[in-house]
Image 1 (tube, one colour):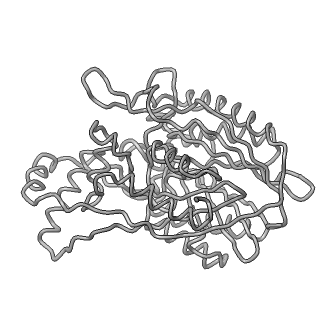
Image 2 (tube, one colour):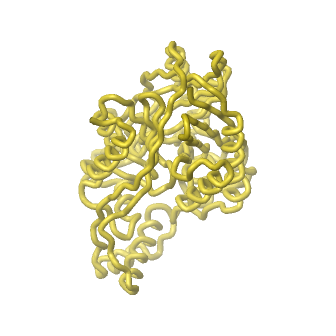
Image 3 (cartoon, helix red, strand yellow):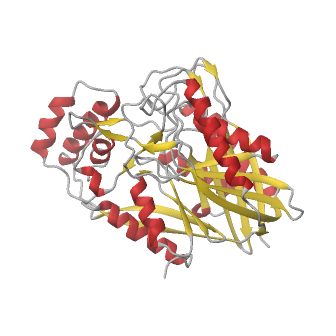
Length: 430
């Protein structure tokens, strides 16, 4: 029988911190609900792993690596076997630092987030004991595809009822050998943008969901977010941003669904797990031509905020690369960790995946449920399916202007193909 441990730490910033996700100067004025980081420790024989979920938007890739190395040094869990994930609420501190959205809050990351992640990991491992686990899956309609195409043929943040969307909600329940609840894990897919441009610190809609299941089950409950790149909350205003009241309404709806799924767990089994890590090879295009970069830089050179600021930075980096001895690469290599519990696999992606990609991965694997985690072990922006690129829109512009060398055409095909190779190592594919 495998071992399981759980712990969590408070990571709520001080009031006055800059909130991340919309503009670069939005200061918090109050705390609606507190933020935490939760650590799940698993051991089966000589194999051990940690999954952490931090109630922040996403964790800067370099800083995510730093946290995972610190956790590994402290717990002796292999760095490659640690997943650090952000739930993608836009009502927490700036833990990413993307150009155009404000600077990384180094003070918060170094003095609150990092030590809390390490402490939670240590405590989770130290609490490990033989455990049972139960699982159930249902559906939730709190999320909806948010890439609405209006009558001007523009892609806007709205609601597209017929767009790709994964409605699956999964609940994992962990208990001791006497079936006393230890912790719950909820998997679901939806941006944490109910609150819109509010000034309250919050976990957004996921907070209410976790609180409801925690109260009813008697066990601490954490949330891991799936491929939310093109999925937002299904708000009554027809948009995917609202008010702090929408946070509460959608949290109650998601909480009711989570409780319903949890109530369907009838069978608890001895814990078993496996874990693997490999490098995905994603083909790259060449840089855009120097003259094209110069032309477009002139368009955006006076911009510094949001997407326009991102484009200015991108075109400047391309121009600068032609003034150096930069050598183009054929592939970009990204680390991927997959953790298997029974016949369920959590797979890390440092991207905001489009839901179509994750659905295709899950369909390709016949004997396991695949739960693709966005914003896990880094933050490398949106990763759309190829069929959406021609439509354009915010996410596509971000995708095409993030890397010096853009990903190749049909990048989603290669990401899926490489991920299936990872899953082969866990004997999940034929």
